[in-house]
Length: 267
Image (tube, rainbow, N blue to C red; front, top):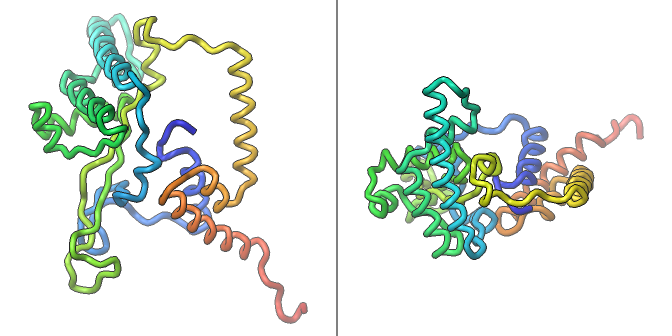
């Protein structure tokens, strides 16, 4: 699996967890300790190994060029829409919304990806200083890039310094928000609006068929695995170990529900 969303395999494990253990707890808002933790945040240091990806030589330059060309295409689409000669699709509206500030922020993120081997977690203040843009502009640029598919963002939180893992009543909040993790992407939906020389050559039919067969076989294999096995074969690092432990508990609950102990009178 080359893309991380966090991957589709993780989603399968978490979906099984929701089905076996009831509705998930609310995310976002104020944490039970009193500390504000943003919706969808994950603890820093528990997922980055699977999230970040080392870019191939020249990959960041291609992504940046594609982003610039996509903005040019979006401006043309916006002119056609204003003239009444075109009704924009969802993808086209997102391209038309791209701004020069969004491209500038993406340029900085691509540079960090190239210099830091894909490990990108700058704060808004750092990006504002590096680009000369305001924090509000940075926030809007990241939102536009994420909506257009050029950026994958994951909010993070960390344990507050001086706080033990257990905590106690009356202690200060144990968690605080920290900088987001980012991964630049080249969205497939945007390629149709790029110049022909930037589009990949179409794959032969036999290659496409082999890929379809492989995906179908993988789907059958994944469906036959337990939650623990699914986490072990699809996710690595600390996140994989965490999901495997969670999957083992879900498997135990499922087995007890599917094969309950017989009543004492029937023995």
